[in-house]
Image 1 (cartoon, rainbow, N blue to C red):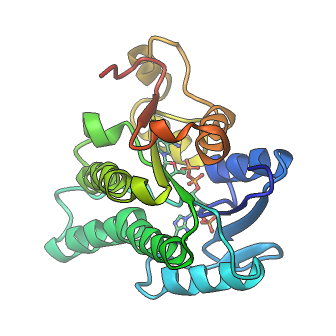
Image 2 (cartoon, helix red, strand yellow):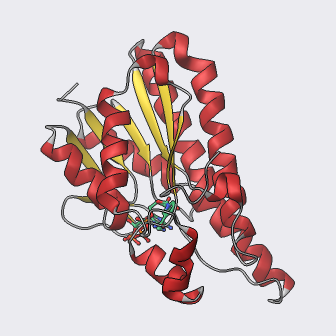
Length: 237
Ligand SMILES: NC(=O)c1ccc[n+]([C@@H]2O[C@H](COP(=O)([O-])OP(=O)(O)OC[C@H]3O[C@@H](n4cnc5c(N)ncnc54)[C@H](OP(=O)(O)O)[C@@H]3O)[C@@H](O)[C@H]2O)c1
């Protein structure tokens, strides 16, 4: 599948950028996405309910009407303290759920309909989180809930559409050395947090990209429905 056309959301930086680079080196045609448009980047702010549809349509325009793989990677990790105002807490909850879960579900739906209408196979790779299983900090109920929802969405898609050749994979990274993780590590006491990771370090974006590229291009169909942990044994299920 080296000539696959792959939409990678949130590929302007961090894990998504590493995924895009790895897939490009493998010969895939990558459609990149970020909040704002830039050369070679489709801009769509996933906090807006209509953005996933615009993103999907622009991606199809750029790829002459074919997308083989969707990688739901874009995500927001922003603290939502309990002692904020009621409306601020609710806004924080809804923003994170929309960006991290609802937009991924909308894009997955567009992808599924695209493949089902054409009778062709397809793959979805969801970048979830260790938080889906372990939970997260007291200021991140929304983040853990969104990632738990993403894993449930992934399993449902895998079970529902395998017979059509549509496969779904989920990756659940622990801390990964990106801006998102750096902010979090700093806010939680920095290096002391590493004591919780038997490997002694956080993951690199390249490690997660290697797993994502495997899921997008190589994973055998019988692996559909799998959730792949990458957390340095900090959470062993
Ligand atoms: N880093 C970790 O420790 C870690 C651990 C587990 C799971 N993950 C997951 O891995 C994925 C990537 O994380 P990362 O660490 O690489 O994050 P990052 O460095 O903060 O990058 C986030 C990406 O998502 C995009 N994005 C954020 N909000 C968006 C919005 N409203 N609309 C459109 N795009 C938006 C960003 O686009 P812009 O550049 O335009 O803002 C950027 O490309 C996320 O789903 C995250 O939850 C990360």
